[in-house]
Image (cartoon, rainbow, N blue to C red; front, side):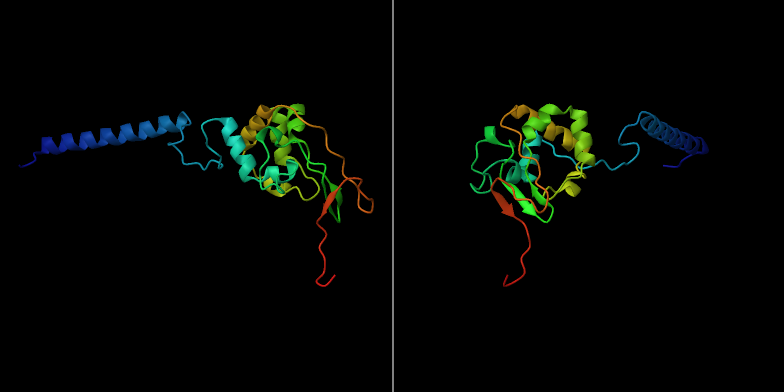
Length: 183
């Protein structure tokens, strides 16, 4: 088949038209803020069938129960979920003094979701709480964590306040003070 000048003209017109439509479509997607218009990296987040399930997963994988659920580590996680995150009166003692894992269920009841998100992003606290890691949590994950903890409802008591270095705690504690070999 031989292409005439009229045929080539038609092909060029179709190609130009397709290019214009493609650019226009890309501009429209960009103007509408659609994700496929401009590649942006979104922060990682946990996906689950519900926010509550995503939050539950974060609690388990983040090790929150290890400190914030009394007896969780000692029982290898064999604590009923209705007892989770109510804090622990067993202190963590080190050079900073003695700290206690908060009752997150009461804390979540005291804060709005917005306050919770800001707290997880900005809080600094005494060891062994790994705030440097929690501060990196995505906003979406902070919100599902809050929703999960709120779904558990309030329970338990407030935990003791930290005991400064050099003072003896009145509760049981786990020592996190490094010892020299042979010491």
